[in-house]
Image: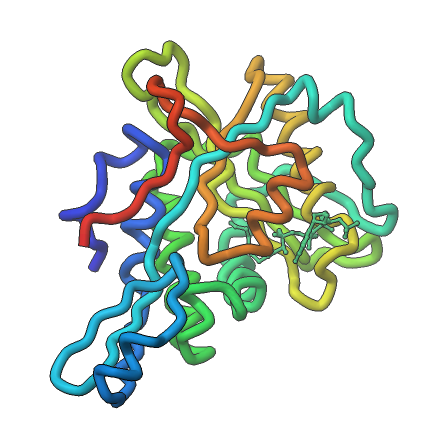
Length: 249
Ligand SMILES: CC(C)(COP(=O)(O)OP(=O)(O)OC[C@H]1O[C@@H](n2cnc3c(N)ncnc32)[C@H](O)[C@@H]1OP(=O)(O)O)[C@@H](O)C(=O)NCCC(=O)NCCS
């Protein structure tokens, strides 16, 4: 089911490719009848691919993403709001089953999930989480995967899942990767995302890590805004170019 032909080996190479290969399964192309003259004038977004075939515009979300890095020393120095009515704990193995409905709700307005029905979105969430749990995004770091709950409840309202990616050539240590972070959409912007991130950073720093990476879909501006507010910055390759990766389609 996965687009393995476009993926790098699990956990290897750049963090972007495994994730977008996985999400690529869920991108849906819109097929809209229109004259070619109209299609030519259509405003374009870098987050979509535009094709024209037999009187139809084919518009498909483009799984392009950028790789970002977070330095723990500067994160821990800067003041981050800790949500007072939120508790975090290391995720238990038994809690995986609670995640798909939460993930499905969190991503309901995020490409490519937003183009799916509720039922399909839940299937997509299960699929993505299974992929992560089984090591498809690199070995899981169970001690750094964190659940957020409201003080008086057990049910998770947010989760952060961290995997380890093998070093790209020229790097000497495997780097933790913030593979998924999501919060219940009714309580966005209450500091839960940053509370989760702080809990992840504390755990990874205690394990001896100094930084982590994240792969952010360009079609997810809220995620970009959150990562940048948290202090993530764009990774640059050895030529000094900002890291932007896209599936070969
Ligand atoms: C991204 C996500 C985890 C952020 O969690 P959150 O609890 O809503 O965000 P926080 O309260 O920690 O936000 C901290 C800061 O990030 C920035 N930020 C967060 N969401 C933002 C948005 N939608 N637009 C602009 N800035 C945003 C703001 O600066 C915010 O501080 P402020 O609210 O005081 O202005 C959450 O929105 C989410 O689950 N989104 C859907 C899933 C997703 O896209 N996950 C990321 C990719 S795996």
